[in-house]
Length: 196
Image (tube, rainbow, N blue to C red; front, side):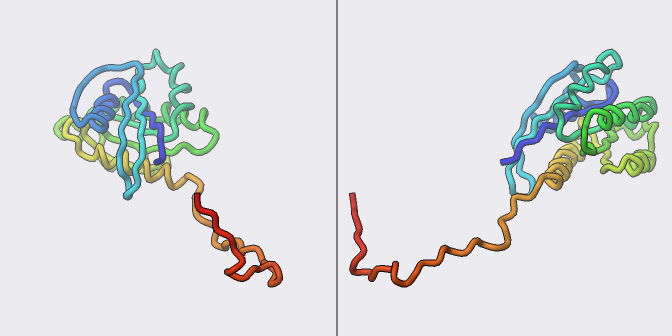
């Protein structure tokens, strides 16, 4: 069973905790956090895996902790609220943290949360998709409140993380059996068998 640590990054009040709780506990809650962790076992493509979700604080006063969260994460969910232009505009700072701290290109998904608030929308779906293209990542709109696309975004991230993992494939050529000289072989009647 593979195991993945996923950090959820984004400004305060974008629904990071709500996404983590909806994914792991299948319920909706609002609970501002500094840092918390949630765990869940899921099956992705007929293979069991363990996902630990690190729920991070988005407020600027916790920016110094961001590097630690990024260091600990293997994959990332970069979240903004479709009902808040300012949370969308600040995504670049969170992406820069990932690029600065991770040695390899970070694996992340861009998520426009709160898509249940269509009447309050400030960021179009097209803008989110365009930003994801410029970041070179996958884009999903989701709703922690209604659970729309929540499971999908985590399973998609697991697939992306698995695709970067070295293959455990069996070598194509089997080592040949050692050759035994004819004279070393004994007829079946000379073999001994011990049963205890």
